[in-house]
Length: 189
Ligand code: AMP
Image (cartoon, rainbow, N blue to C red; front, top):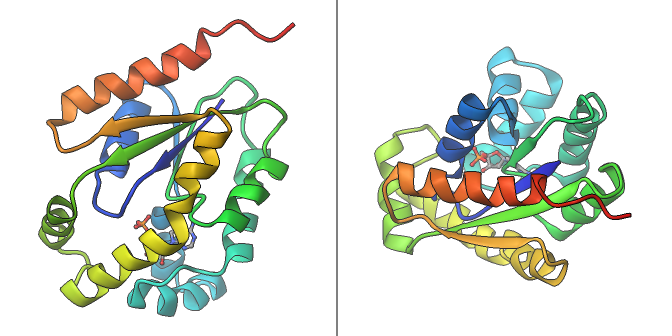
């Protein structure tokens, strides 16, 4: 089953995904982490991606789709995949529907928090792409390009909202409950 983690940068979805994956043996795929590894390794892909990331822009869809499709194809059949940071645009979301095994998209967890909380968290993280200017740009790219996915997944009946301005454990419980509900659903006949 594939669970998509949606929400603005800084909302804490990466922290939640890493924790849930560790606790329950699920697979956590963070496209931001993958890209940062490529940049650190100095690969051709990393060099291409770096300029986009430094500005807070999105890396081109096709690069991202190839990266994720490869990993979905390699996934053991019964695994739970937490997809963190992908899709981030409608073309990516459509490509994911095409690449995912039929019926495997089970859930879109939508993490929410106020802009003040998001900005404070991003500034506190101290990453290189987390200066105030880049943060504000990333939030505006999010609103314009990624937020439409909320309606996209709501239309498909996959959206579950998780209010994320709370302590980690309360959020974690909601994540587990949402994933469990999908896993326990009887298979369609
Ligand atoms: P993240 O760690 O998820 O915030 O990602 C860090 C940066 O990597 C983003 O600001 C983008 O530049 C890039 N990135 C990560 N995932 C994607 C994606 N699905 N589409 C385009 N760019 C991405």
